[in-house]
Length: 151
Image (cartoon, rainbow, N blue to C red; front, side, top):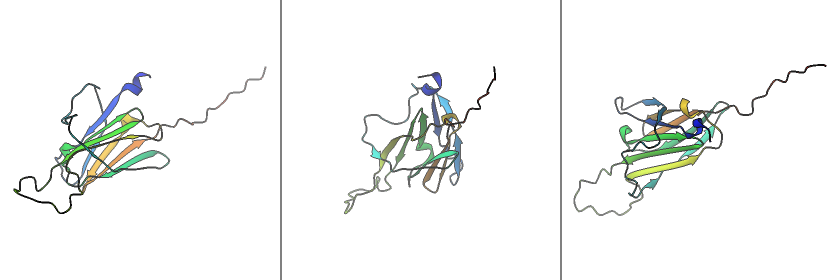
């Protein structure tokens, strides 16, 4: 692995503007600690992965998550999304569920990216409970001009 593959780029959303939050990737040290407890049970986040000619898109719904509780990491060919959603009934006493299908608490998802990307140019936007991550695709199949020299 070269140095670029060891770099981790993170986007931590901030809740200054609740309606429309957008951030760019920033390089972090791989030993930086986060706000999440590694020993706690986590819910698995659903994602959609798509592409166009220039970008890879990862989209996920995370209704109820606060922006400052969401982290997005790009490390080589991996994308990790982590966050936290608080159960709105957590302060109610003696609540008995008939159905309990929504996951509340810590959630995460790591996705192996299907193409090589430029992680340092990634951006994330969180709006109306939907996270959209956009990462430019590396052009690895670029044609190389060959110079022909006649002897």
